[in-house]
Image 1 (cartoon, rainbow, N blue to C red):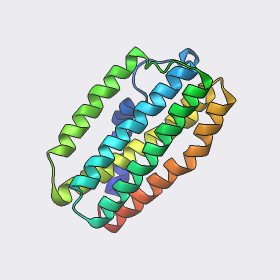
Image 2 (cartoon, rainbow, N blue to C red):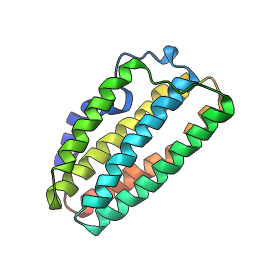
Image 3 (cartoon, one colour):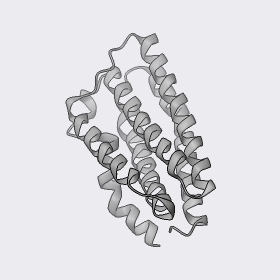
Length: 177
C-alpha cells in the first residue's frame, strides 16, 4: 500500500524525466520524437547501469542487467530507424530540464548502497516506466507522422510494460511495497 501511495506522489516528478517541458504534441517532428525516445532510453540505460553495479540483492542486479540490455537494443532500433527515415534527431529545448533531473537521480542513487539503494532504485524504476509508458501511448505514438515509427514504439511497448511488471514483482518480493 505504501508503494502505491509513493507511486502516485512521485509519478508527476518522474514525468519530467520522461516528457519534460511545454512541448506540444503537434510540435513534435519524427526526428524530435526519436531524439526524446532515445534520450529516455539512455536515461534508463544509465540508471540500470547503477542498478547492475550497486544493487545489493541479486534480483535487483539481474533486473537492472535485463533493463540495460533491452533499452540498449531499443535505442539502437530507434537510431537505425532515424537513419533509414533520414530525420534529424534534435531534442526540443524543453528537454534540458529532463537532463538536469536525470543527473539528480543518478547522483542520489549513486550515493546510496545496500538495501536502501535497492529500494530507491526499484521505486524509481516503477515510477519511470509508468511515466514512460504513458508518454509513449499518449504523446509520442499519436504525434508520430511515420507509420514505421509508430509501429516501432507500439512493438516495444510490451517490453516496457514487462519491465514495469518485473520491477513491481521484485519490489514486492523484497518487501518494498
